[in-house]
Image 1: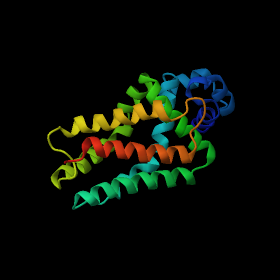
Image 2 (image 1 turned 135 degrees about the vertical axis):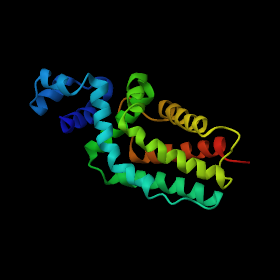
Image 3 (image 1 turned 45 degrees about the vertical axis):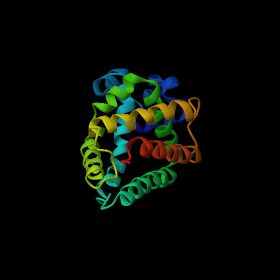
Length: 193
């Protein structure tokens, strides 16, 4: 069912995705769908969770930096590796993730479910990295980490709404450009001066 849902989200986006088409493609009944999922947002989160598990290693492999320059270079490297990983994904998977990522910025109900899902297990890794950034003087320390991470997320969601298309999957070049703008703004907001 997750494969059929990935294809549906890639082809039609979140808004126009049809549970009936997903069920038909997967060979499941509505009863079996509702046994596993509450609704379309729940299914979208399951697709995102499956995909996100393949990216957890990015944060595990991130070395703890010793200098501010290393901190920002590592964040840049993660952004570039993420884009490279997307380039290596099958076209359908990439399109689905781009369209579902855009849906997070436009549908608070989907975002809320993602924030309460297993994807948030990455948060402890992010907190440790940002705390290290404060310790080495890369990140401002006059604002709590939780607030900084919320700002980073809010900036990302705003940029998604403003810079990425809502009627189709973003191209990898658009995603790469988006990543550069996002990292630049995050650095401007969070860097210790």
